Length: 201
Image 1 (cartoon, rainbow, N blue to C red):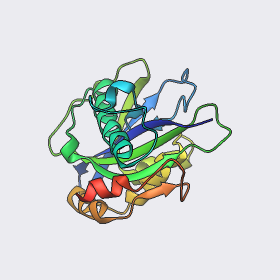
Image 2: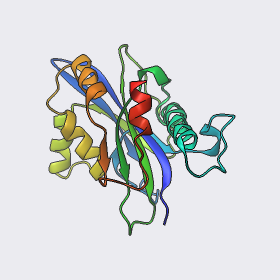
Image 3: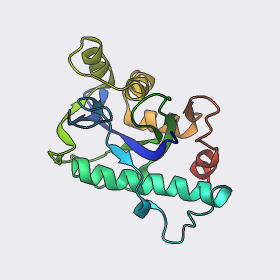
Image 4: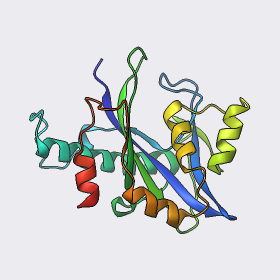
């Protein structure tokens, strides 16, 4: 099964000498990761592609750029739909790309972005796909997962582990802008370095 393109965003804000990230509770009725706590995000829709995109062109730098821009548009749309938040493409930092392993009922090739929030925001979940939300420090989210009180998908827990030692949003963003993109599996057929090139351009 060829994975569908998707994107997700790690929204972070300052806390008391720490950082917090937004986690959303997926409806248990959903086929993919129902009942899990996740970052906002979802599948890339055809309408997320730039208006001049040639989706019949399967390869090449232009198509890769279109896929990257579609992932950005998708995560902005999904964050608005799932959490009621408007975020800007200029605030997004590409940090990772995960492809769902073979054997699961749904597979996605997912772009991961980081987005700092500098002002208080109101979260409004859709009460359809998303039933609840929490602002948690990465360490607290991981502790609740370890205790069996919440369930985190592997990419979510791995991402939280990678940022758990930060206590400053500014430092986290500074480091992530310079860090290598985490790609799983390594040398994935569904990720290409166009994201690195566009991030640094």
